[in-house]
Image (tube, rainbow, N blue to C red; front, side):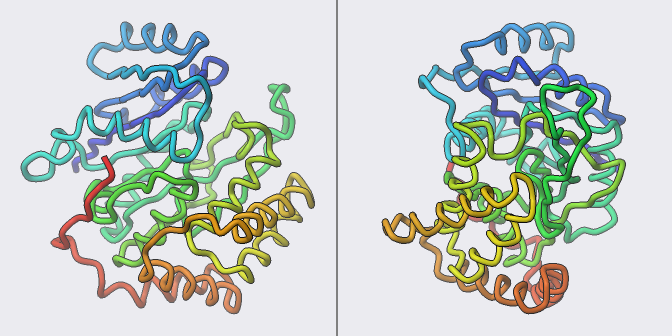
Amino acid sequence: MLRRYLLIAPCRDESQYMRRTIDSVLAQTVRPALFVVVDDGSTDDTPKILAEYAAKHPGMFLIITRKDRGKRAVGPGVIEAFYEGYRAVKDRIEGHGTGDFDYLCKLDLDLDLPPRYFETLMERMEANPRLGTCSGKAYMPVNPSDPQSPLVSEFLGDETSAGMTKFYRVACFKQIGGFVRQVMWDGIDCHRCRMLGWIAQSWDEPALRFTHLRPMGSSHKGIFTGRMRHGYGQWFMGTSLPYMTASAVFRMTKRPFIVGGLAMWWGYVKSMLAREDRLEDPEFRAFLRSWQWASLFKGKARATSDMNERQAGEWNLARPPLAMPI
């Protein structure tokens, strides 16, 4: 059974967390065939740490260094860095036949992964050929400064794969055209998977639970700004106001209580009032809203199950891939 997977990790100023991530990758029961790290202009000890690991593990790491843009970039900036890594090994991914890799993963360097994480994901994909992208669930420390802090779930829906460990079957990644360069890239991709008959999924199981060392949405100017950015992303993706409102109300019951959901809703409404750009794909927007309305009336689990069954006829390995923004 072929289990060749590629990791591409965009990073900037990750010296505080990256050793735990890299060490957890090296401790995997099935190691990556190649680990590409794109240093997006770090100003801390990140380059020194990367050089140390590359020297200790020759042939496993490919380190790419980008010019410092002067600030941390989230959303589209992260995907730009990801695609710089993708371009560096593009011929090996898209070569004759199946290429050198069966799977690829966009990985953040602020995680701690359980040892059978990638092996378990590949086992699930081998068991279900329609499974295009998948992940475990993220848990974050209540107090990030306390090593003994209890962990709480980040509440990722079962119908999506986690943005910080986007694990893909290469064939699926190419068919959907990869990631868009905009906030909500990690939601758009899963809906495109379903459009084409693929399945996107995540599981909350001990072997797949990983620790997100930096709380979701807090990597750039704080949690409030991160949640507002999420609201803008929902606007860009094509989400309707009723669904956004229901989602925001649900988020008010999760950490950070009340303010997180309010920030998401205001980020959406502010974008709507300003008539910000939206994803120009009417077919995708209609598909998305069909799933969202079904989710409101049936619940996400039933809506997703019904949609996966309905779209099964769209699944076609011979379908030409969409052009990727590389």
